[in-house]
Length: 251
Image 1 (cartoon, rainbow, N blue to C red):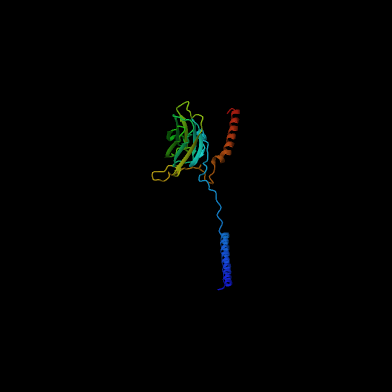
Image 2: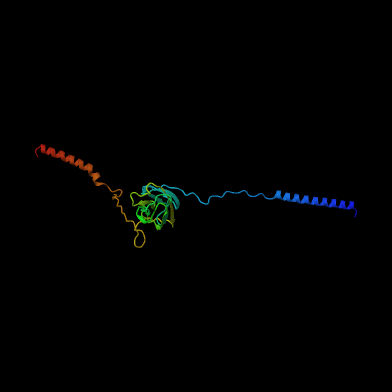
């Protein structure tokens, strides 16, 4: 093979390699352009929901109604807060109360958290108490108790932060109160009063009432007094006149 022929072959193969390399690059670029775009980032949603707040009442007659679930409030030393539980007689009510401590706050050796459950007539059903230092949480867990049918509207829960120390360091400091209410079971059926039944089960018979009408004279029966009244009057008049004449004549 001559030098010129070898040079031509080299040129041809070089051109072929260049064409192949260009096609491969174009294919890679096209594949990169058609690749699916990455999905946009989605912000994470909060895993917890905000707990509703409520304001307990100092007077049980004004207690706010709380359903089953959790609510938050604020309690001060010497306060007694009342809550009406949305439950009916026959159901069971329990609660967990957490008074959140302040690690950097004052410390008490005489304070305590007291939780009481009463029936709708405010008669205590059960009560629990736990000490509260002010820096650590005070947790009271009250098991469920059945609500009796004693009249009234709703059972009541009271939460008190007490102290035997008149100069307790916790005075004037507000503490977060977390109240979780548990309601179990179904309301008791309402009994309807009925009339007393006889021993056989049947209702007593109604008393017999007999109404006696005034006697009615038979039709056509003549009224003798009414018919003779004019005759009697005439006879009396004639008798009177005759007697007068006889007396006048001296007879």
